[in-house]
Amino acid sequence: MTMTIAHLDAQTAQPPVKQLRVESYTSGIIGPSQTMLGPLADGGTLIAGTPPGCWGPMITPAFQGGHEVTQPVAIEGAQVGDAVALKIKRLRVTSHATSSGVMQFVEGRYHGDPFVSKFCASCGTEHPASHVEGIGPEAIRCDHCGAEVSAFQFRHGYIIVLDQENGVSLTVNQDVGNRLAGNAPAMSALPELAAQHSILSLARADMPGLAAHMQPFLGNIGTTPARDLPDSHNCADFGQYLVGAPHRFSMTKEELHAAKTDGHMDTNSVREGCILICPVKVPGAGVYLGDMHAQQGNGEIAGHATDVSGETELSVEVIKNLTLEGPILLQNLDDLPPMARPMNAEQRQKVAELGARWGQHQIERNGPVTFIGSGENLNIATENGLRRAAAVTGLAYEEVLNRATIAGSIEISRLPGTVRVTILCPMDILDNIGIGHLVREKYQLD
Image (cartoon, rainbow, N blue to C red; front, side):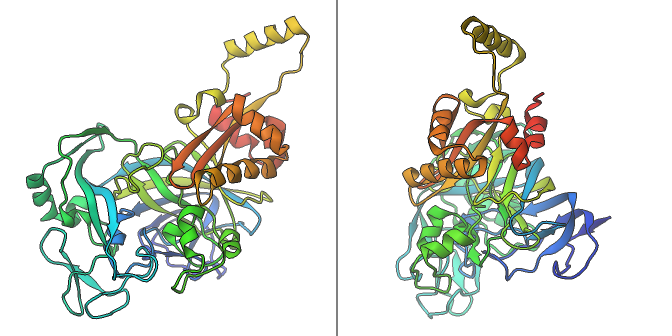
């Protein structure tokens, strides 16, 4: 059975479906207040069309989060304390162009956090409805009084055209950018139900002629947090701005860490072919996704990358009794750090010969696994990822440190505080926690 935008309440006893297409969004909020679609059968397929992430919602003052992610989907049999594996089968950019760059806040247009609590400085309306008039930095206008109302501007920006088929892109000059801005929603390929303004309307083209590879990935994907959060703040580094905030999403640090699922990780290896294993913190899991990027280097150093519309197809698998604080990632082989890549048959034979020469006949069977760590800064995020690895595997913390040093790596996903902690982990441990079969399947291990 296939459903398109299956508007079902996950709390009712609806039969699970094998395939579900989602084309509705949450306007910046993710949490238990959102009605779940589905339920989707364990082993079923989820197909989603997503609008761009950061910049579009940022310049749309009605949004109370920095993204526009899909309405969450309930997964058959997923209970609090389980995990859900998301196997990304297909990921395709649909935007023809986008714009991004280094941001600056416009003071006097927000309470504490411009991603979450915007208002019109002219008429005082909170989260005002708005519209686009013309193009350029003053194009976003309040519906109530007509004043320019965006809480964000570019310090340095660019416009980039995209060739999904050939995997290349190119930044363009101001004349081209102005033409794109005149047809911004179509060039962004905004889905029908998307509520954001297209960032192309601002027409900021400071860096023409730069060619860049495309390697699309999802910047925000996972499961519903245990309490309502702005979708861009479902992580520790962005989430830290909710602690003691002067708006309705204010919470303590302890409340944030208990609730979040670290879906917003901007990890560029969360792409076609990977497997992402996510914690379940609400009944049904509430799988959601969005914030597709056309490309991004490690660190997302400018603060924002190339947010695009796109389509994703993934399958789901419930893993019972695997309690996680944050995601585990099985990266594509090409994305694994060199020290954590499984050895081939010839290398394993040479290792056996080396052991025989020295009398070490026991050789560990292992596989690569990546733990996402998040924190207020990179040092805290790294320790968080290492401690998550120790807690889930049962390995001593000091052993995790050693494994990450000689048979793994620490890599930056996003500044200021999201990292990847990758280690080679014994297969018997991976079997005991319920993901050994996924690791064998992913890396074609014996």
